[in-house]
Amino acid sequence: VQLQASGGGLVQAGGSLRLSCAASGLSFMSYPAGWFRQDPGKEREFVAGITWSGGQTYYADSVKGRFTISKDNAENTVYLQMNSLKVEDTAVYYCAAQLSYKNSDQAGSYDYWGQGTQVTVSS
Image (cartoon, rainbow, N blue to C red; front, side, top):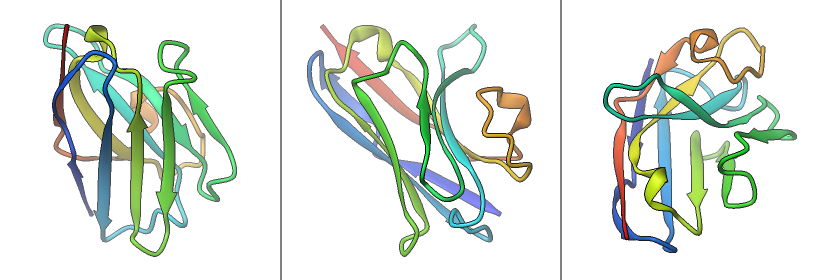
């Protein structure tokens, strides 16, 4: 199983980015997925999650109303649309897939991880 995250970059505060996570060896149509982020020296932090059906999404309070997680089953890709970005959103963003259907915000409940993509928001 491989998850390939992409779409990170440098953006000014208030701007937008869309992250993508393409899977091979696993179908996002069958499993929940999530996005996490991590700053150096800090623990990995939950950002957003989506159920296997795509029917439910859930978010960290810090990004609610600004970020949207979605998926395209035909492309086997999960997206994170990030709007109204803030300097504090700067981090490496990771996508993850979960085999246990817990729909959890806990990093330990996810089984496969992408390599991370850097998002830097400047003031």
